[in-house]
Image 1 (tube, rainbow, N blue to C red):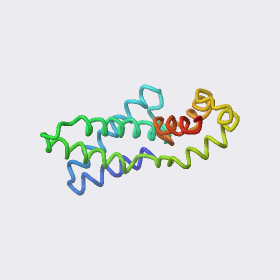
Image 2: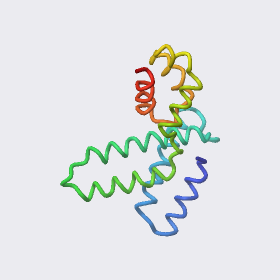
Image 3: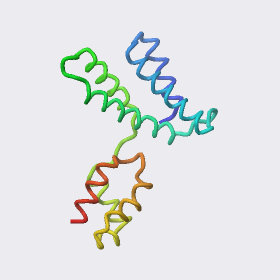
Length: 145
């Protein structure tokens, strides 16, 4: 995801007077800028940094939604909206079948030896940002049985 796309979408939301959407995108932009400054790439923000921050923010939004009490429907709907907006910008995640194929291709010798630790070590760096770590772990567990 390009940082400029986030900025242009925020401007579009402002022009459309969609305050809630503008707020959600603005929070994403602020999070990206903060990480960019921390990593020393304030001027040219790389796409992979933007994707990494978006995934982190999506995870936080989902946790907010999950922990929100059912009695607070106003908050729940706000968290759900934020989660949906962030999801629009999140990079496409690999499916379980794609993860399994990747593991079989990249870590075939460890799958044969049923060594989950080495499978995880081999594939986690390569699948970072492309697949959920819990799903990778579950697939590796299944392949090692």
